[in-house]
Image (tube, rainbow, N blue to C red):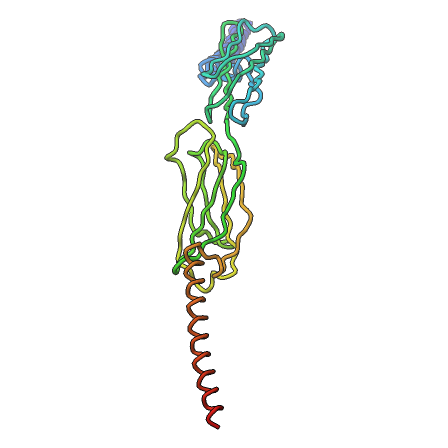
Amino acid sequence: MRFLLPLSLLVLLAAAYQGGGSARRRRAVWTQGSEDNSPSPSDTEAPFRVRINPSFKAVPPGSSVWLNCSSSCPLPENSSLHTGLQRGQTLRGSNWVSFQLLDVRAWSSDVHCFVTCAGVTLGAMARIHAYKQPHSVILEPPVFEGSEYTLRCHVTHVFPVGFLVVTLQRGDRVIYSESLKRFTGLDLANVTLTHAFPARPRDLWQPVTCHARLNLDGQVVHSSSAPMTLTVFAWSTASKALASTSIAALVGILLIVGAAYLRKYLLMQSRQ
């Protein structure tokens, strides 16, 4: 009986030791989890969203534009618009504001909308392009003079000229292309492109066209002329005058020669 008490005490101590070890292991796992510094999803997501619609707009110069700024905040504290464009009317709802922008003339303008919700301010941006597709693209009839063709193309009422590329093509082949990025004016303009190139036999009866292309940050606006045909009869006024003079001289020579032969023939007949 004296040996039973120490044995029971040993069993109780072993059980207590195993329980304490399990507790220590549980505390070690919890501590390791609490020391993980990786951010939770709630730390990386914005507390609310801001949207401006449309986010991109292309208009003719001088137009007015409406932009709507909205958010997912149920009770926004403030909504504002930052832009260098002239402001017009403003309409408001529970979580949206619509702004009117007047007389848009700059070819590219950035507009920023900001919303404050629960002390946090977030924003969104829209971009407005002002452009005018060419009213017309006119290719004059080709002029042949000497050994060259001269092409003259007129692009009318286009904006912005600095983003215009004018290209002359013979069939599908580019003859000449010019970028007008050196022009920085903010008004509608007319552009005339003149180009001369040597005439070759293979060019005869080939169609030529003029193409005007506006490239506005990836938005491409394209216009083309009616085709013209390259012929040797496409002479200038001077060439026509020279040709007429040459023909008249040739006719005169033929008449003189013909008259001389006729006189000789008549003399021979009279002697017989």
